[in-house]
Length: 208
Image 1 (cartoon, rainbow, N blue to C red):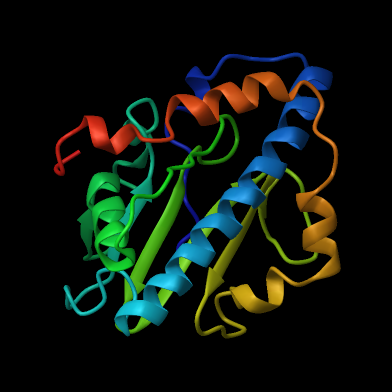
Image 2: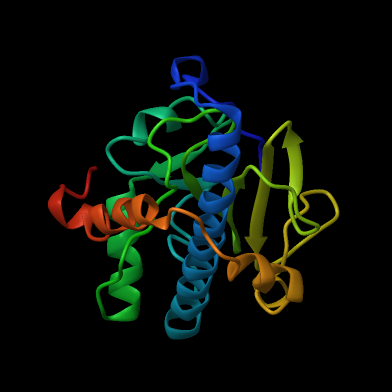
């Protein structure tokens, strides 16, 4: 999967370094939780339907960005080759149809990007999928992209060329679970942002 540029990073609000580091350490925990949540939904969808979301619907790579109304503008112009795109509302509807139930929605805690993208990304290419999140902290299971920009992506098939990780291996690893369960300081604001968008796409049209 391509490494993404950060559009509009120069317009981000500058935070004091110590506050920013503490905030991002907590935000990374939420990003890891969201990665596991969506990864498990994707695998459950596959078990129930025999395919992955949007599999077989395009002859080129198909992307869906996990981004709400304050984030979606930053997803424009990210993919430099031929592809198709589905909205977050369409991704949610696809998963809910396959599972036969409604799901909660989780988004990157940041409304404006700083040095990394502030959204998650789902890609289906043939019968192979990827789901990626972007972190500040570097882990053994993440891929460094730039200073304070590390990416983790799970896939049903991994190769040395793309640095993806099998979800069943990542989600059972000691390091991942230690990071997933570490204490978060000042978690109130992060919890509030999660709660605000739990059912965001129910309020917008499928076209996003």
